[in-house]
Image 1 (tube, one colour):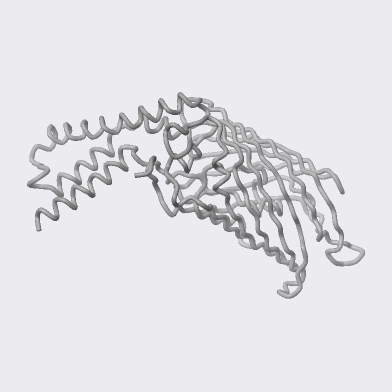
Image 2 (image 1 turned 60 degrees about the horizontal axis):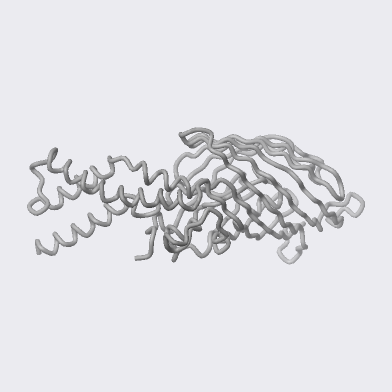
Length: 359
């Protein structure tokens, strides 16, 4: 029985060691997305968005009458390298990748006003990712991380022998393993952090999104009509401002919208149909867990308008963000254009870590 316990204990320790020595890709700090479908309806703090590495499941509740769900697809069977778009082996590494095309996100939203309800569905995907290091530098950072893993285990064993002489791998197995895990957790993993940063904070991404919404004008299920159809693209450039977690994000945005349900004061119904071409950009600064930004979008086509909104976001923990936005929105059918939003984004992963390579 003791032998069986020892074997199980050692196996469990090796698993935890691998997780604490950067042998796996840590996904706990992947981002919680802004909703694609909320962007279609403009009723959100941020319309200009980019989500290169996001949670598997996201809930956005920026106000009590507007809730959206975003789901990541085709991720569960991927290795850590495949998840970030590098390929399935070291020889496949590249600075420019389109592999994230195989990981789209689906978005669903229900929004309710005093007189109508909107239901929307959409999708988004990263088309191109450019990392901030070239192929050889990425491979070098990966090799340093893997070499550091073996060194960490050796250092941990020496610390155990020096600082905890009363604990023994064979006679006090459980206590020894628990303390060894704590020692491993306390050791620096700079090389692992450097490699992870290259993948988690790309230099440039190009995203594509599309969404469609239905309008229920009198809150009756059987009475609905097409509302909006939109397709858009966002390019994001993210240079690093310092050695610490500080980044400048510059966004470019273009969107085509067909709105088939604009309220008509003559018909007293949602009968007007307009087409818009939206052009805009955004500047955002990220410092540790805090982000502040400003976006401006010019609306052209059937009616000229603009949106000018400041945004703020604070990461409470890996699974909960506080978000807000204040400024001028596109003018609605009620002639109101003030946007003032404070809400919560919540997200989770089906897996919090992935092996870098297939076993």
